[in-house]
Amino acid sequence: MAKEKKQPRPKAETPKGFRDYFGAEVTERQQMLEKIAEVYRLHGFDPLETSAVETVEALGKFLPDVDRPNEGVFAFEEDDTWLALRYDLTAPLARVAAQYRNDLPFPYRRYAMGPVWRNEKPGPGRFRQFYQCDADTVGAPSVAADAEICGMLADTLEAVGIPRGDYIVRVNNRKVLNGVMEVAEILDPTNPDKFAYERGVVLRAIDKLDRLGVDGVRALLGEGRKDESGDFTKGAGLNAEQMLPLIEFVNAHTAIQSDLASYQQEIDAPGGERVLQGMVAFQKRENELLGLPKMEAFNRVKNQFAADYLRSIVKSSMCGVEGVSELETISNLLAAQGYGGDRIVIDPSVVRGLGYYTGPVFEAELTFEILDEKGRPRQFGSVAGGGRYDDLVKRFTGQEVPATGVSIGVDRLLAALRAKGRLTGETQGPVIVTVMDRDRMADYQAMAATLRQAGIRAEVYLGNPKNFGNQLKYADKRASPVAVIQGEDEALRGVVQLKDLILGAKLAQEATLEEWKSQPAQVEVPLAYLVEETRKLLDRHR
View 1: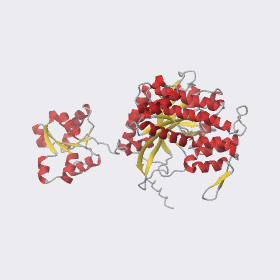
View 2: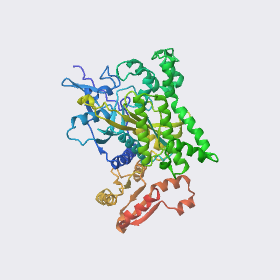
View 3: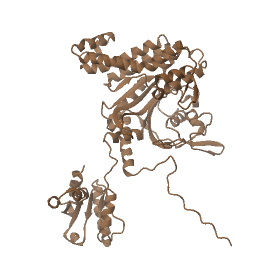
View 4: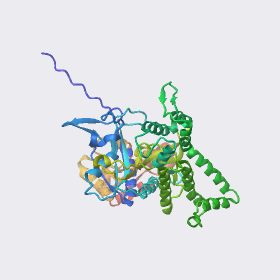
């Protein structure tokens, strides 16, 4: 009789593209999300948790490839229906807004936090499961909703520990680009389907501005571009006259920043107040800016300057003029709440996602420098983005429902906080109550309970207590700050020994024998003062 084949043991390894999160990482994320949630709640947003699984039909066009609806997601078939793990938190919101439209208060303001899954090729720092943190308003057509999201985003960054001056929220508008495309004669308002191919190429080209530069975008607007490998990408086929307004739009950020830098130099120079007064008078904002400090007034006029520049590009396009007017309204609403041009700016360089959004778009960028893997300085970059997407719920109801929102990259923001020294990747472990006598386990458990009732994290050592050194090794692995020790002698005298593990480790590494004797890391205290004396040791290392 043949021997039964032994089943191989499963490999203890994380699936490709996924990762495990331990102690400090989970704690840091939870604490950051709690701070974000508090800001959202202050703005009147309610939490929403949706199922991790949606129908592929509900996820719809938000998949990476609409021609292969099961590509890009983790999908499975059940009862002739394809289901998938949610790809983002926005598509589930659209389904909720449609499904419960008769029960929800509209406008509906919600925030959501949780993991999403994408069945894409993983790479360095790119995982198939990651956290998103979204806030959206559904059913509000006014750009006041967009302005609120921008202001709330600025408040959120400051709440989690990104100081003012280390971030900027940049705002653009898809309608401005539509206006530019009208001027370039590749968008006909009376026939939206006309020139659809050319507009698609233009959107993709502008989206690659950071990578290809202006010359690369120009090539894609024309006949096409050959990359370094020799592959050729067909262009939009526009002539030089058509390309002109599009290149003006692409160059607008650089031109605006250059002009503003020149103005600021003049304003900072002796007699610069006259230059500022001229800018204020030109924008007819004397009453609004009267009495403000010089730089605050300049920050207020910067956004109007950018709006005026964009208006010169969109010319007589009604759509483009409407887009610029919306940007002005957002800027004015924010300024009235104290958000100046040092925190939130009109910036035409925000182009990512313009193919998806229908109105204002915004992006939060961290402006401080970090060192890359080769030790070169670079700016940290974007940690959040969003905008207006008025076609979202229409897929379910057939009726256009306005919506706007923002998504924060949780892992990116955590990395930024670590780079700023706001997070260390370390967390303090619990106080360890050691076990000197197995028969007195109830006493040790009572000590731990007393500490917990006082709000002090504590646990009893539950391993083999025979070797006391192993208990201290365990405490070290747990990053425990204090060990509580009570043997038979201490119990008879009603005292405990408190061992300051952090100080003890430091003294063992750095102190001389005299210093070690003068700063004992272990003290004896009455059991009645266990909480008070433990708290003193914990406060020493906060």
